[in-house]
Length: 122
Length: 470
Picture 1 (spheres, rainbow over the protein chains, first blue to last red):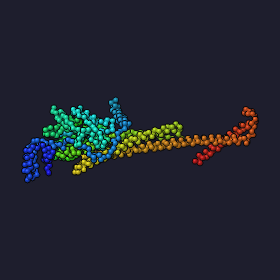
Picture 2: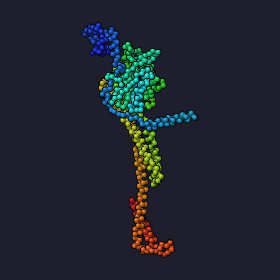
Picture 3: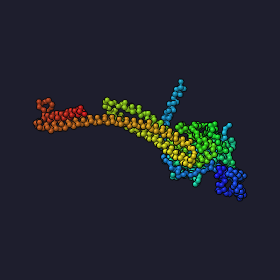
Picture 4: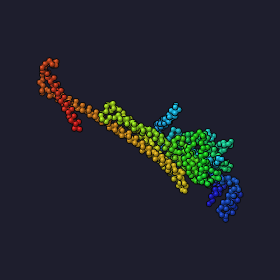
């Protein structure tokens, strides 16, 4: 199992967008894979990576796929388990409370402004 | 030299009460921002459905419920493409707008875009259009800025102390660049690590004035953004419950202010009442009427006071409910990422919500005394008024009783008179003191009067005796 993202997406690209590969590409790829058969995994990864880098069109498609799940590209629909939450209707602040609180705030501001005015008068 | 960042993203998560006056606030704001600031004309169209969590986009598909857009911004006389998406959702009673605007990682040729100065972030928030006072959502909002520290997407030594300080400076810088000068920058609150990368939180929830919740997440690990994207919907939910809890707490402070004023006014009011209530003598009619007025006034104050304590308790319950939902959301993420350290997210539940809860419980305990004081005052005044009323009624009843007995005795006297006084119906009635003998009618009347006075006096003596014995 490879951790190389480029190669991870290679198999996905083969399955979902086979039109990206010409007949020559496929033949070349088959030979490359055959040559990796007896190679250690790290070497096989290197060989396949080199092969991808030599195919500009395939490399571009793989790069795009590599970043496709990094930025938000799609937002999945809501899931049923997201509804397993407590329901509560948010209580709005009553108008009279809002008004009284504004009066208190304004009164506090004017009280704190008074000493400054006294100093200015002095 | 200012450190450049790669693929800067801005995420706005705004929340608005569905049943408010301006229920289309979020959608209207989106349409205004995108058209006026980014030159886009395609409006956000909403379609409601029944459900707890509903994707509202009218033209959503089976695998994508967001509206996508592209635009360009000018930087150093260069037009730079930007992309983004908007996701309208309803979570129970709350409309939610999740808006992402970003410099993409790859350009149209599939090539990596260049790293940028953090001042690029200002272009994603032109004229502060994403600030809370501009968005105007009734249940608050969270702004999340994400940047890659390096386009190579891995900066392993970020955990060293020196590098963490550098990252903090970078985060502060990103915040300063993002927020226009005419708006105040929120204070630093705390930092931590999420999905392997450092994250910095700004905006202290207990600060009333100019609260603005911003997170700056600097990606230093390769998988951080993947995990964030995979759990994007969970983050929408998390920020919804968080903002509702914080908003409930802020509104509870307004109720607290009003309640405190009323509480402080109760004691002098009650003292004034009881100073005017003599204990060593009966109340005058004027005083009695005044106390009857208090008996009408106090229930009104009591009702108003109880409504305020009820409001405070409602906000306490709201905080609890949203905190529990927040916790459930974290548990869901944890179950999908078992080894992941989510302590940065859990802090809100463990620390902030606990503070909110304890504060409200203290407030309710304190203010309950005010209601008790009003209740007891009402009972005391009612009792005193009842006593005065009873005394007044008894006195009236006694008077009636005396008059009744007196009249009855007079009647008896009149009946008895014909057996004692000789009848002489023909005898004329002479003026007073013109004869030595009283006319039989006069004698009968005098006898009745004696009987009546005797009966009344007898009744008075019995009442005096009763009072002395009682």
